[in-house]
Image 1 (tube, rainbow, N blue to C red):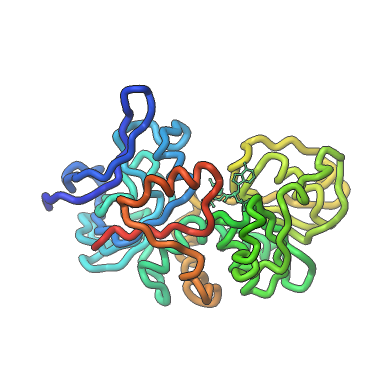
Image 2: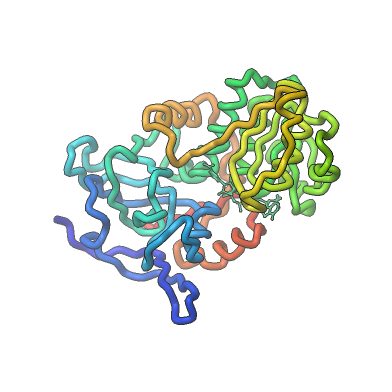
Length: 333
Ligand SMILES: NC(=O)c1ccc[n+]([C@@H]2O[C@H](COP(=O)([O-])OP(=O)(O)OC[C@H]3O[C@@H](n4cnc5c(N)ncnc54)[C@H](OP(=O)(O)O)[C@@H]3O)[C@@H](O)[C@H]2O)c1
């Protein structure tokens, strides 16, 4: 049994029923009792991590806890023998960082069934610029393509566009030749969104205005939504006949009040995207696509690198909806 100390950003309950985040020293022996021990080189910050880091019980029930739903690193040992010492691997989703110590620690121990070999064509660092946000963007786009949504058919709406999921979706869609309309609350970042690949940038209100009506004018072929609530309602009511909406997130609201008219008068389809429970086989196939034909050419401009000690303000920023792009976490190995 390896016994050594490592650094982790750990969240503990503070006296006033609040939560405190600090970088502490932990011991590998205290990690959960699973087969695969991984030395984590990179992680990334997602909205779900910020919920976990602020005591959201829907994500994490027990504290002290180390968040981080994403991790990429090198296998140190595998009791089950599936992986060899030195294998580069990627882990996103399942219970990582929720109620299992996550990628904001320099080591994780997880079941072999959560592990994907680092796909050929990606470095550990690049895999975490994608992380859950990029993987989910790819899942949503793959879902739309299987719905026969093709480039050249019209505009695709992306909501929460400056966020992690939004930016990855805009970048990938535009590289695949789609015309992307980015909806954002940060119009001052429209230059960035255009650089990333948006053909047009509009405000959140330009999407939601009039959404209380039973149906809205046909505006988009499809939509990828990170926001929920009125935004998702508006997206459903404004995609054209036979179109599709991929619902991915709930930063504004988990509620959906809508009408049946988009479904029964326009044949619109609502797809739910759940990256955490995607099967391992499908996960490997999608990672291969992400690392190969779908590899985003200018990944680095989508991310800002931070160390564990710099994460606290970034977590607050993502909770306020003020983050732009991806935060790549360097674990310092
Ligand atoms: N289903 C899945 O498997 C999956 C995977 C990854 C993420 N998600 C979910 O997707 C959502 C986004 O995650 P993320 O990591 O990309 O978060 P993020 O980086 O914080 O991005 C969210 C973006 O949404 C917009 N926004 C924030 N608050 C808003 C509000 N009240 N009303 C309207 N827009 C708002 C902001 O973009 P603008 O300022 O540009 O509008 C913000 O940057 C979260 O709900 C997350 O849980 C789900």
